Amino acid sequence: MGRRTRSYAAALVAAVMLAGCTQGNGESVPTTTAGPGTPSTATPSATTSASATTTAAPTFPADVPAEARANTPQGAIAFVKHFFATLNRAYTTPAAGLISPLSTDGCESCAGFEERATSYVADGRRYDRPALNVVEVSLNPETPPADAQIIDAVLEQLPARIVDTTGHLVKEITAEKGVMILRILRVKDVWLVDSVKVLE
Image (tube, rainbow, N blue to C red):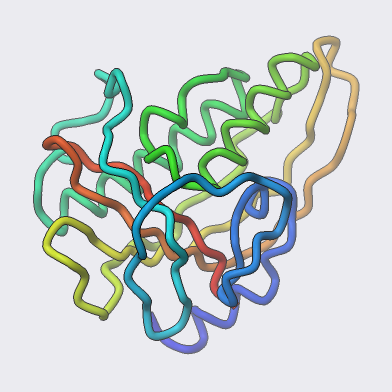
């Protein structure tokens, strides 16, 4: 990704993308509790914090497509695309328990996404359309460990409305664009998201 693409990250400020995410300086945006783990790999433009675990989720979702299961860089990219598609489904349905099986126990950002989806279910709220559009997903130029991949994702936060069960407007979401850096681990023959950082 070029500098122009990366510059979009400065605009990334809204609810869906900062729920549980950490910034490039390693500071957590909202309050979530870090899980135990091992040091993550640093990237040239953002430092990933310690978060990895070595235990896969109890039940890996059956709907993860074959291309997103492959132990290849292309498989890692496909998995990240599936992760964000699942995030959209969790927020629009709404549905709890969709994001946790795709992430390690130590992924703070993933816990934040899951917590938000769970709160939508409890409060009878949902997005009236997909929260995110994936513009571009690519491998980060830094070489990761053999069991991990560092992925850059250019995302558009789409203009949307959060509504209640009657369709009444609760909150309007404005359009933004930004870059996230994901560290994904190969654990027990599947990919899991280990950290999600907002690139500054």
